[in-house]
Image (cartoon, rainbow, N blue to C red; front, side, top):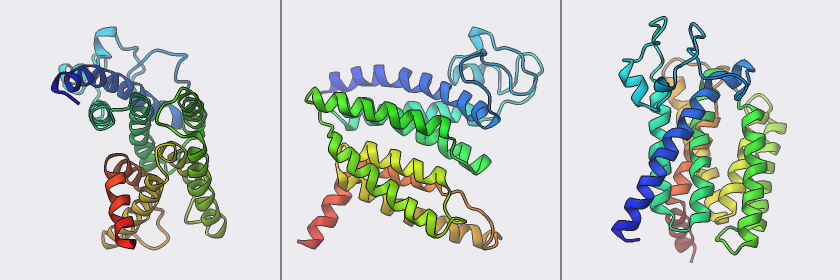
Length: 261
């Protein structure tokens, strides 16, 4: 990839990522509350005042308002601009790492969605079907179209990844229902589908890293005073494992396979 190509990708990916991040901040607030994502305009989470168009610009508006609502002056959580920045950074990173446009278009929103699901799981200890379900359907449709169009996505591998990770966690959830929720199972299916369409090795890296991160997180929680009955959300660790696989999964899988040969 030449410097000019990289700059063009940066110019396209960054604003798209920030806008998508802005949508996800709405989802983080509304979905757990059972509110519609499209039927009402953006509004202050404290007083409900609709936001003016000038106040819905990702990151810039939060900084300009100094993190407060323009109407009631209530504080607006820093999670909003941080989510937007994270999505912008992930879109740019994916665009620069993956030269194939089909893979980049699939992985950029997938990576951003993982951020939103992690925030919701941390706050509410659940992974909402209203986000994961459509993501699975849209991703599956996109993968099939890309495969038929000759893109570097494989629908069969995606299906195998979906079954391997999703069914694998389903078995764990059935054996130990208190340690794994069905939301985690569905998230595993989404991760397996998306990463599997690029390479099944990425699914293995995501699953292995998720288990490792989850184990470390559980130990840290115990050291901080949590007891064994405390519920530690597993979704963020799965998301971290998936993001690791997105960016360095191929290198990790190749290194592991070289050790076996």
